Image (cartoon, rainbow, N blue to C red; front, side, top):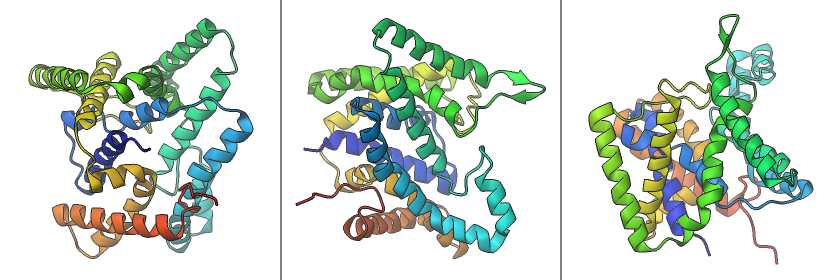
Length: 307
């Protein structure tokens, strides 16, 4: 049985992400949890497995849809930019043809890192290595060599820094999934109080760039804000009933993430702007997701029931 509260969380996050891409609307209330919560959810549902199973599963649910949704960008780039420019982007470890590719790459690296860490049988050693990796990721993001920031390629650096939220989900998953209403109410109220005081006195979290590991603020304070934000939205959604549209967006959030860019570009070319663009993007993305799940499940990473 699916957890509707988790689907609600991811659905709300997708609504915020689409607003970013349509209108560049940012708020401390949403920036503190929107992207980190995806990695928290990954940690909540993570189950250690062998390498062959991991590769098979993530190829079907991440790599195949990633390649499928990259085909239109590839063809359009060939038509408008030429073969040489497209090849230059493909072989550049810091660029992607599809705007959502960084998230898939970061997610894959987190699973690879986790598999490697779980090969270490000593729990204390594994914990030390995990925290050294996370701290190293943030230290490197502030390190300059010959005037250039040291950003590791292929979003490995993003995975190193976001791993702290994956660990948060892995360690506190049971609490989030099984907490009763009273605990959720207390957590949500405490989170709202923290956010209100923080935004009023300190301005709250500023927009940060996970792709280029550029934080634009004190990292420790940012992480604290993100942890509180993720805990708050998870608690709020634990109190809410299943919201059909929001839950659907969350259940198929990868399809929504990888497809909505196309509808934004098409609608902008037709002169649709602002809130009309936002609403129509959501409607078209929902329709496309429904059709994809129904008729192309294996290409978009949806599990099918085998008889």
